[in-house]
Length: 137
Image 1 (cartoon, rainbow, N blue to C red):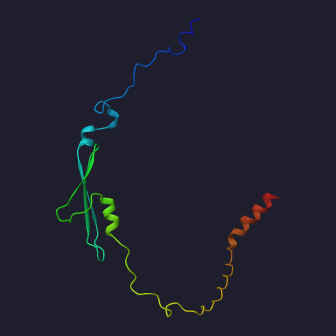
Image 2 (cartoon, one colour):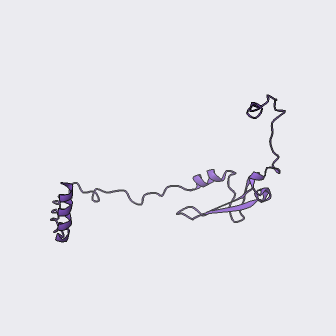
Image 3 (cartoon, rainbow, N blue to C red):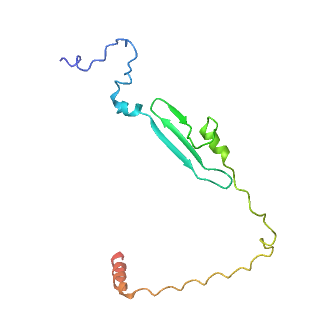
């Protein structure tokens, strides 16, 4: 029988080199022309007490990303994330807590609510319950 030729192992031929597709030839990436186009992302942050509003504009493509300075904004640092976190601060408390706001005497405990009395069971189901008891015997 000639089954040895069908199920034989692969020949041990060394691979001549690495095989990678060019960026343009790799069709599994999708539409490469669309990915190369630069998209503009505008992020705006609201005004808070003591802090002006913030606008961050970025242009992003598959190959690179760059920040764009908006015209209405004052100069800022090159790191948009760092300037965002440093420009906002926690609000200061309006007034310190006083002793009048925290009572020293504990509030009297209220007695627990009385338990609900059992509601009457519908008697129309008694016939079926009795039949079930007889079946299980």
